[in-house]
Structure formats: C-alpha cells, structure tokens
Length: 430
Image (cartoon, rainbow, N blue to C red):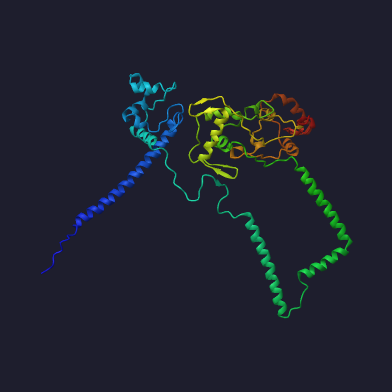
C-alpha cells in the first residue's frame, strides 16, 4: 500500500498565477515610476516656460509660491483659473476674487493648455524638482582640471629618470667593453677636465664668452624692463562670480547694455547693481545644470544662486517681500584694464566714430567665464593697430576732404589711422 502525503503541494496553475502576479506588480511599479518621472519632467518644462516668470515653487515672486497648490484648491477650479482667470473673477467666484486681489498684476490666461498639461504642471508643483542622482567622488565644487591629467611635476621626474637611466646604461656598456679587452678611455669626467683646460688657455674664447655674456645680459635686462606695467593675462578674483560667457555669450546681452557709457564717454563705465536688478529682480536662481568655471573651480547651481544673493544684498533687495529695503552696499569690483595716467584713451572715439568692436581690444569676452586682460595694451600694440586699420568713411563726412588729400599724398585708396595722425604723440599723451 502506498503512503499518503498529507502535505499537499500547490497546484501548478496556482503557482503560475502567483509568479505572473509578482512579475505584473513589479512591471507595473516600474512603469508607474517611469510615468511619474515623465509627468514630472513635462510638468517642469511647462512650468519653466509658462509660469516661472511670475511664480516660484517655494518663494514669492510676482505671484504666490505654488508648491502644494493642488492641496489647497480643487483640480477643476484650478483648471478654470489657469485657462481664464479673468472670466472666473467676473463670474463672482469667491475664491477667484480672493486670488485676484493677491497682486495688482493680472495673471496671464492659458486657454491653449489641455487637461493633461495642467495636471502635469500641478503634479510638478506637488513633487518639485527631480532629486539628482548621487555620483561618488563628485562634491558640490570640483577642480577644473580633469582627474586623469598627470601633474606637471610627475612629467619632469619621469624625464629626469629616463636621462639618469641612459647615463647608467652607457656607463655599464663602457665597463663591459673594457672588461672584454677594449682600451680604457678617460670617460666623461676626464674629457670634461681636458676641455676645461683648453678653454682656460684660449684667449679668443674668453673674448667671445665675454661678448656673448654681455649681449645676453642686455637682452634679459631690456626684456624684463619692457614687461614692467604690462599686465596681459591679469585675472583677479572678483567679489561676485559674474560670467560674461553666460550673459554676453549664451544670453546675447549687448555689451553696451551694461557698459552704456562706452559710446559717448571716455570711459566704458562699471555698471551699477541697478542694471543687474533690471533682470535679476525676477531671476533669483540660475538654470538647472548651469556650470561656471571660476577661480580654478567649477561652480554648480547651488554656488551660483549664492552669487545672485550677493547682488540682492548690494542692491538692498528683499526677495521674500519683493521690495527694496534701502540698506545698500557697494560691490568692490577689481579693475582689470588700466592704462597709465599719462595715456589718453577715449572709448567713444573708438566705439562710436571708428566702430571698433569690443572684442578688438578685450578679446572674446563672450567666451570668458572669468574675465582677464586679453591684450597687452602697450604703446607698440596701439600703434600697430593704427598702422593696420583704415579710416572708415561710411557716414563720416568730417574726414572726407582730408582723406582725399592724404590719399593723394600717400598714393593710396584708403588712408590708415596712422597716416591720419594716429602716430602723433599729442594724440594719446597730454
């Protein structure tokens, strides 16, 4: 008689159902997570393009903060408000009237948004920005140099080691050769001693070495003196990490929007912090993912937002109340381009009359995160420019007659700045 197993096994169909259920739940949770991330990403995109000029998630701007707004109002009411808030206020809706009294600035209507668009925006206001994935070994501020680049001192050590190894091998080969019966030679030291004795007894070589030494000394001396006061490459650390690459390059802000004095004054002028506030009253944060190379570091969003906070402090701006406090303080910018006191240079003469671009003297400013002196700004550099630059007569009748006379005198079609008098001492020196 066969024994009976009282512990019955699970039917095969039930086992398959359990496995299918687990796989389905795992797949559904993964799919839900992907859908949520997509909604968050799309909601953020819509929020940044349509809402961010007046609203922030966690701070007051023109309008109130929107974080958790879906918990305060019903979804259907929010959709009506976003699509046409003026119509909702006119209907006498109590909530709409209260919301409309928040700011004297009327909210823009967005009738083009679908229910899904609005749901995605509201979802983003609830969950906020995606949390960045942690990357091992990457702090908030990282060095600008790539990690795989060998230090300079290591290259020198390796070069020295190769040279020493070469001399050791040469000495070993010489010793082996002598052990095999080759005649002994005085070696490197012996040859050097014989050469030195010959040099000491040769008067002609003494004279040549003296002349060579005098010429080299004069070359080094005058070369050093000519570099006095030449600050090409000067790049001081400024009190605020202002990036010309971001403002003039990526955002295409014209140089003369900030340096407005350049077209009608001797000086280009340092823009006041009020010029910054024309934009930054509504821009308290930099764009996500923005990086700025500054002072041998790469500043990330968190650090760059603090730089904007410095502008607020200087202007006396309260970003919470959206108003000026009156407690201002100067920004102590460090001057980079500086000519001697005995040199006269007029920006308006070059910018307005001659039409010279800023990059001609200041270099590719729109590519600089950290500004530096691009040109040497020496007298020779200025004169070379005057020799090479032709006078632009377009729209400039003042120079027409004198240009015609000078063109006949020099036998050219276009007169250079130097031929017009750009090499005369009194043009640049008092």
